[in-house]
Length: 108
Image (tube, rainbow, N blue to C red; front, side):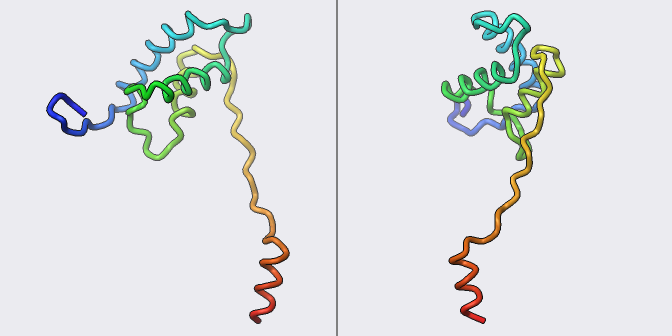
């Protein structure tokens, strides 16, 4: 909310990206980081800390996308982290449990 008590519109991604990168630079300087450099684990820890403190930096337009993935991509493109995000494997739903299959057959 702004000082008039109205809801503020979320920041544009370009605006948020610059602020997130500035905050990352401050934050990472205080962290014990692997000698090979910060990784996705560090960016996730950073994101969780922003969430835990309810940081206004997370109030940006995500268009339904995961904000951590957006931030991680920004950190990768700015060469602030040195790993490549590997998408999680797609989880395929298993077959219906036997009890549900039997109920379905019983109705036929």
